[in-house]
Image 1: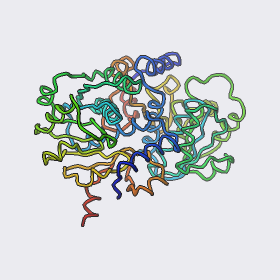
Image 2 (image 1 turned 180 degrees about the vertical axis):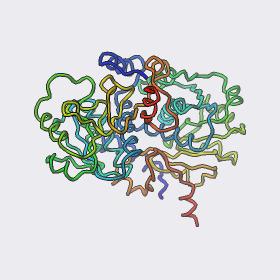
Image 3 (image 1 turned 30 degrees about the vertical axis):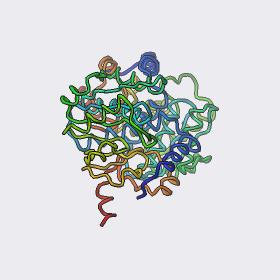
Image 4 (image 1 turned 45 degrees about the horizontal axis):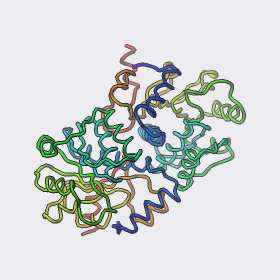
Length: 223
Length: 223
């Protein structure tokens, strides 16, 4: 299995929406669904706080929140920067229609929830973390609650030497996932055409679910 | 469980894309995925011929074909009227990128396949079936191969007194499904917000899959 660098990961997204003709709504729907399915495989039903960033990673999180609701979880959203784009506004509106609350008090919600989803920034993010996200990362780095990272294991984790409990890599694992040390590593985003899947070395999904547990696979390769 | 008449079913679709803010690409992706998942629950891997109509029912079929490919089936498409709309052109292009052949000789393909998916017309269709679809329905009515109907059990079936083997109702079962006599009745399209689900009497899905087997439920209600 290959771990993609940032420029290849970006090129893959461009190909999927260009040459392969996917709408971003399709890719995001399947990506977010795979995050929700991965969670449903490993964690009992309970309160899930989803921390949503301003870009596509956040969009995946909004989709995941809606599917988690359908799966019987009790999701809530912390979404401090809501971009003025129809794509995100619609995804948020769908969550609100599913009675998913958007909360203001992060600390209080972290205290109440059973699981946290970090859908803050994707692989394209670089540079310094600006307010209010610096505070968000600080809060997440201090909680004992299990964290699920969407696509990218959070940089605060590395700095503090702690790893998210679960990582859901989307499309294919990125370089930053290579040293992931949490308990559960899943792959989701089951939309890669066979030619591209072969090029990227994506392992074959076994069944008809939208996610695949990678732990054993990686373990075997390390032996 | 309620069975929706045509006007209510149309109003539901309007609400989902209007008040609830879904993009048609999202609804179609989840609907088509639920068709593929339903098939994967009941039929062994093999050759699946999908007969695709010119509207949304056909779009659901194109999405189902792609997911069936990912699930290890060998899909092919018969798609005699391809509308000049980006939505359908992109969905077809995604299938072609997945090496799914578009066939011309329906009779030959019906002979070779293990299973047929009828994604020809949805609940909005009314009036006479025009060429080339009259020939398509005739061919499907004469084959002993099992047929999976997407959302609507085909009218040729009623005329000839035979029923499709599987029906996958989408969003909620329609009136035409009430007398479905095939072996497997599934519900898919897991995107209905709770308020609307309550109004429509949609039963609760049990797990984290995108489809639900209705057979037992209907049986219980009939007792």
